[in-house]
Image 1 (tube, rainbow, N blue to C red):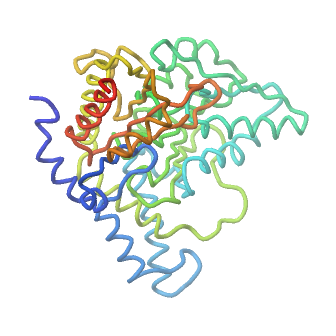
Image 2 (image 1 turned 180 degrees about the horizontal axis):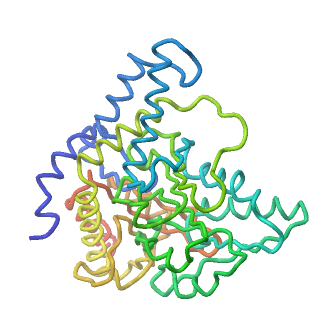
Image 3 (image 1 turned 45 degrees about the horizontal axis):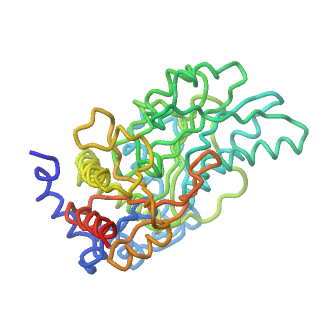
Length: 396
């Protein structure tokens, strides 16, 4: 029995918990890598907080403010448990507006003050630009002060995975940081970050962009031994404008954001806790299996269409492949129709996809493509509908 057949009843029960999905039965939302839809439990948690307990955190002594302060601290503990934190009493959790702000904060407030002339950092320039630009900004800041920091490109292999053999050869006594990505936002592959620690050695900090991983599949900081995990809440079914930096505080100084801490996004943090609770209850292992199975069904269909070019590792396309399959993200181009035009065509059929360059770094794709990103509320029927529309274009 396939995963789609085995999990169908479970998935139908979850799909019914997303108001925007159920209110639009003729629309297939296929852009969850941009932002995920929200289950009713998250919406209810936010509304309840805003109508029964709304107050500023850490800025009052009255009961409402105290309760909010307590809930924010409990949210930090909740996130540590969600990430399988091996030493929670040592780590820090800092709430930010999203992945981009989080990566920039680590680059500016933690990394830059430590760097000295001749130091090196390793950056994944074929991943999301949010995981390259902040490190380049930090290096430029130091250049203006007369310090030269080497920003070296992360090596990739032919399957668009990190080449850990070449990475290990790059590590030396001046390596101060490796920036990496959990799930690639264009190719959909798991970047196998659990292998990075052995390549990096015991002393080099690793900062992980987990924007496409948190909320889609389990992420254990015990197993990966990374030093930072940064993600956006809105991609993990919470509200926009919230995210988090988890800092291990083991290699290098303890992370602390510079400057004055303003009022936290309390409703966003409340939504994030509710989203983590919902995801745990649904089962991240099953969510990952569903999304992977949908991605395999899609790539199986796409490779039969003569005018479709699927991006990324070609050996991961078949359902029965021995190569790790895509984690619910598939990008492709049509050989005769421009990607932006194709995006409009698909939208006219109620198929909502991303059609552009997907914010890749300088070593990424140079031509726009269609990105389909699936989540637990998507169905096999929606995938088949997309394939049918693409097939019909070839017959016109």
